[in-house]
Image 1 (cartoon, rainbow, N blue to C red):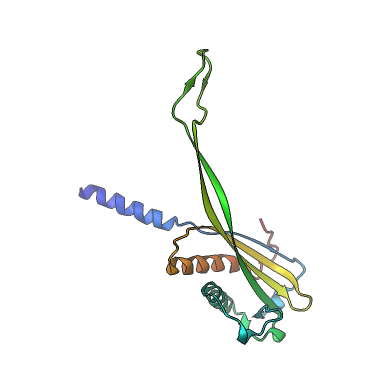
Image 2: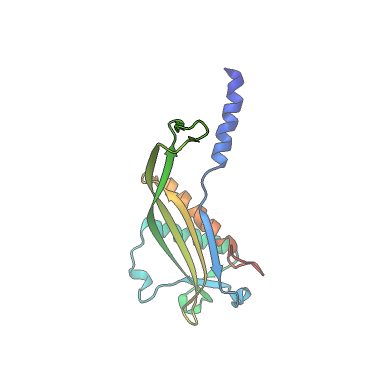
Length: 186
């Protein structure tokens, strides 16, 4: 029994390291002078900051973005003084995933014709969450950078799993803000 313990532990460590990470994509305006962007504020059109109610998700996103941008040396300031505004949104979409199963081979009346057509198809529905983060130029209200993190969600995510999802998504999104020189989005 002891001989199976070490490989089993290694398998669990390997699987834990392969946790699903969000798929991330970015796009940005190549003509922006990103080196001049040193301050930021949240974009809030027509809303007073003191009168809004923030959901738990909004609080988590705001906290993580603030921490990540502070680590990059960007300073949060009043909206009228900021060199860039940030905005975010979250959407969920249902996706379908089909899996076909083969219950064996079908033999045709001719010996040289054989087929393994799927005899059963199972379709499952799942949710994909998309966290979108946008950087807006305060001079003209145009989006100058946008990142999208997509990840499969489960309906029973605990608060800790939700925090982990937000943290990982925001970290991966902000890896390329400001974009590296000569960066070409994929």
